[in-house]
Image (cartoon, rainbow, N blue to C red):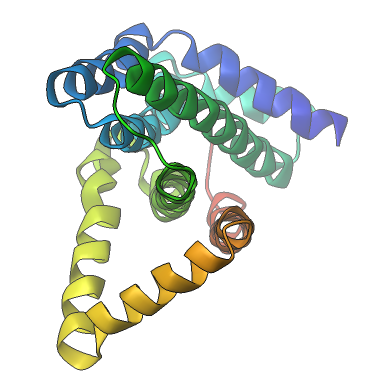
Length: 219
């Protein structure tokens, strides 16, 4: 476990060199939130940009060739993969807290009403999207590297749009969404619990796929 934590720490150190991406991650949502006074949209945008920040560690490793460092360290490939996913969890939880604080502060500054259900629901959906996007993109990065796979970073958004389109045509999607919202309005504590469970499923499946890919890859 200690070696997995150390691998995640290496990734955090690598991510620190991506200051331009870090600045964009926080500045753009603040500007958009302040301009539109849509504080929850600002929080959601921050989590979307955090996905790109999560992928920056692959870019840094490729650019500096530091990925070879993992090959000479006393780390098994499975520990490198688990460390990378621990890194993405730390990044996701940290950015979710920042997104929540950002939404709350903007609501105070601009006197925007922020009810509990909308606040918790928006953060829960942002968390699910973050881990879904990371779960889709990480195996691709492990397989092809960042430079070749960067074009696929928008794939999670496309998958969501396609899924919504199919569901709207095949099922009573709007009615089901209303029923689901009504259920969570009546059981608000379940929204974050469901979000965490769904996120955990995404990450476990993604980590298994990434481990399978990485253990057969030449470093």
